Length: 254
Ligand code: ARG
Ligand code: ZN
Ligand code: CA
Picture 1 (cartoon, rainbow, N blue to C red):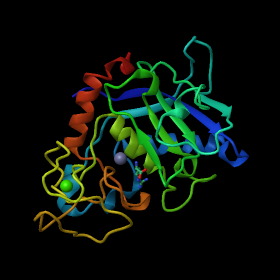
Picture 2 (cartoon, rainbow, N blue to C red):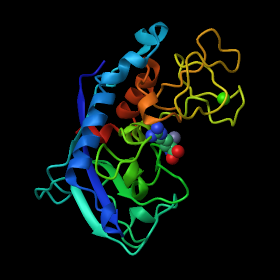
Picture 3 (cartoon, rainbow, N blue to C red):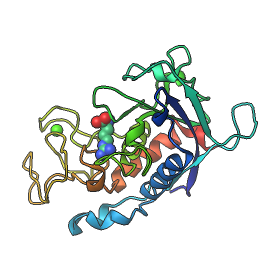
Picture 4 (cartoon, protein in one colour):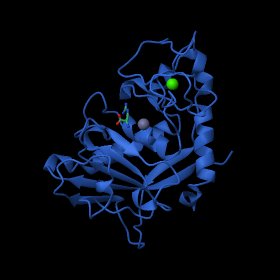
């Protein structure tokens, strides 16, 4: 396998109410969480049941705020834009100045993360590889970003970004996106077949789709459990992320 790679990140903060203009420290702590989670160095890995400890995968991906902007000038890797939009939706308006948001930096060179107010209970959303570059990246609700500042329980440990960056690297939801059925797949061999999304902080084991005795891997980042309940990517998920970085997202590594 390849060595550790570092992905340059730009965070675009869009704010209407002043509180949405979150501090650099909240962003920096978010990057710390991504770096722990994608290296399997997070302190809560012990929450993985013993039977699955050997499935824990180190994605060997690190994230660093960009130090050069698209023209080559020095940058903090954080842009701040005041907007007239009180709340964004999943329609990508946040990703363009025209829509009241901020334009993407070239998606072949940066992971774009937009942080803003989102409506409808949405914590974040992501674009899978292969889509239009102008809208490529991840959107996060400011209060589900990082730790401290405006981050609000139970989504205050930075795991929304971990989940959304998983999608950006081609991971599917662990239950297979088939409603509550047992026929959908996440196309990963070492995650159990699971009916629908789990929420909150379930007790283990939690069975569905005849997946006993160990049941659902609800502590996986690609489920919908609380930040404090999720703590791993599997080796199979890491293989999918590897394939993405070797294929459609290989330009990020230059
Ligand atoms: N796209 C998902 C949503 O908006 C994100 C779920 C993130 N889960 C979490 N524990 N932070 O519902
Ligand atoms: Zn998702
Ligand atoms: Ca399912």
